[in-house]
Each structure stands twice: as C-alpha cells, then as structure tokens.
Image (cartoon, rainbow, N blue to C red; front, top):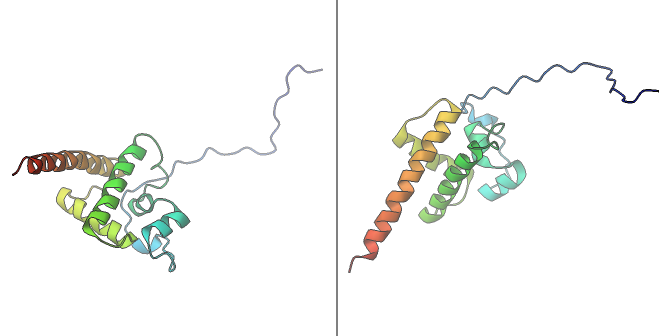
Length: 139
C-alpha cells in the first residue's frame, strides 16, 4: 500500500512559450470590430477593454503595474471623450490616443509606451488641477 499517490499523465506537456508583444498594432483590421457595436461601451461589452486590444497588450495588460497604468490612460481618454462632447466610439478613443502619442512620440516597446503615457498623464492632470485652482482665484 502506497502512502502517497503520484499523478500519472498520459502525455507530457511542453512549456508554453510566452506571448510576444510588439506594442503597436500595425494592422488595424485585425482588431475585431462588430458592425452592430456603434459605441465604445458596446464594443467593450462584447470584447473587453478596447484600449488593451488596440494597443496590442491584451495578454499582459491585466498584470500589475501595467493594469494600473492602462486604467489611468483609459480613464483619461474616456474623460476627454466626454469633456469634448464626442460620441464614445472606438474611433474617438483611437483619435485621442493618437493626439497623446503625437505630443510624446510613438514608442514601439509596450512597457515603455504605457509608462510614457502614464507619466505624461500624471503631469497633465497636475497641470489641469493647478489651472482650475488658478481660475478659482480670479474675480
């Protein structure tokens, strides 16, 4: 009688190769777009966070600290869409991200790209808060 049993497997599984992340989605047509999904909310209900898919970081975007950085970028972009009075569509999300990256320059590495955007938005939010404070003191 054995005190411990060992698991017997019928096949050996090869270790999984980590997903290669390039950072920038060159082929925009590879992103699944539903013809019925006219809004960003509908798209995200069907597919998950749009930005993760668009930025090509869906595989790694839910890990710490990338999830925090991505959520900051996503929250900022959605707030900008609302503030500008744009329709909340995937195209509007792309346009605002393109504006941000136009100011910063595009980064090919996903980690550096997200870090750069996150750092920039931290500074930008502080500037906006100071401008609001300055405006509150005007007569």
